[in-house]
Length: 282
Ligand SMILES: Nc1nc2c(c(=O)[nH]1)N[C@@H](CN(C=O)c1ccc(C(=O)N[C@@H](CCC(=O)O)C(=O)O)cc1)CN2
Image 1 (cartoon, protein in one colour):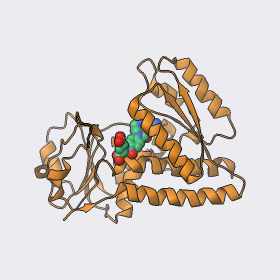
Image 2: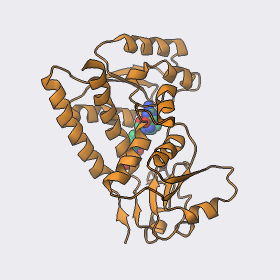
Image 3: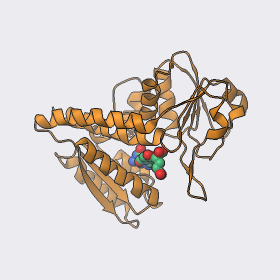
Image 4: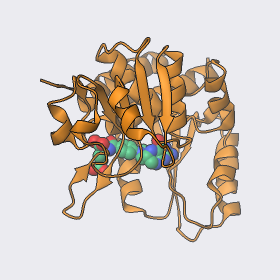
């Protein structure tokens, strides 16, 4: 019987811990503050932004909302970021992705002060991860590691396969697994021997954005499956990158979608906000 790795329960635990730490910081006169910048009205982004404000409120972190129109120009957005960089009261800045087509997302992210990069997307912070130095970790990869650790899943010496090579999930989670002494392979759309790699993996982390791509028969018996995919189907339901029903009887542990990795992204953002406030103001 597979263990269901409950991201909602683990993220609630983390947010409770953050709340206690925020209380201790507030007792020293420091109220952590996150600025959330949204451009346009992408429906999923609006949900995630609202959930970030709610999580801040629940944890005792102040949050500020900056909502720019879909038609906003690159320079307007950069001006907004520079203003927030200069504000003493703002500890963390995040720009909700994706951004409209006319905006160069890399340039916008790189304009954020690295000390306020609570998304952990800046080259300074990703570079630190690469060379094993302390920095802000991107929230989804950090959330995956936390799920594995709090579920007592051993990583050292295990074969870990990461499906997907994005800068915000695939590559950083591969580095985190390597840091934990797993043997890591990154597979992508041009990987030739994917079936062989999947059948060998003790831990499979799927982040390719293709609904139900991985089937039970693809997996090693007893594998641990972490599903990062959030694919909305025509009937409105959400499916991961792994066919959950099909995989369930074959694996030893698996994250559901929804309720697995997704909630951890926001919990780890709260942790990063608090860390930014402590580092900037202590
Ligand atoms: N600036 C950022 N933009 C984006 C990030 C990010 O980390 N920083 N990640 C994603 C979106 N995201 C947070 O922003 C996010 C995605 C999913 C969830 C989540 O809790 N998902 C639920 C399902 C919610 C639903 O019904 O759609 C789940 O999996 O249980 C939280 C945050 C891209 N942009």
